[in-house]
Image (tube, rainbow, N blue to C red):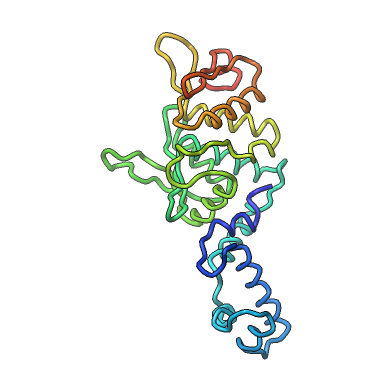
Length: 258
């Protein structure tokens, strides 16, 4: 299940490697060769592995590609190759719901941020980050005309890259045309939690009726897939119309959306 080491590596851009995962592979080859031949310098190592000596030198002098460092950080937190039935996978998928529905991932830094809402408290958002092992801080709480955001205090950029590897976009989400496939890799109970979080962030209540409207600026394919998830986890009525979803009062109650 994503995120995997290779998927995470490919979120890093690289001028030397068309496929950034190959850089991770070459770095590991250098470290393994150097461990077996500790007296060989960069030229001999480079010739043996068919790599430029200049590239090898940095890796022999304790330099490390950002992608390798990111993979190690993700391993330390247990984010890579999570068991679909396990707690880490559930926590990552639920955090993915918070980001898709009420947050964003910065294009340059890959740092995730989530804005609390009327139904989703700051404490709930902080708990979502803490479940994947990260502490948080509040940003823009006292800044006029800026949304209050909950952001990680450390390792957020690696977490953001893991979420991108799981299918989250960076920057604007309006072009996201498919729901991340990872939602279907986890148990139905987690999928239900994903749907509940999404609707609690995005759902609008009507003043004169008990239905909930989920209005999102997304392609119709995304909205159709979101409905598929809702239809999978609840029995009551959900309808699609006008670039959004209408969730009946009975469906909202079944989903646990107040």
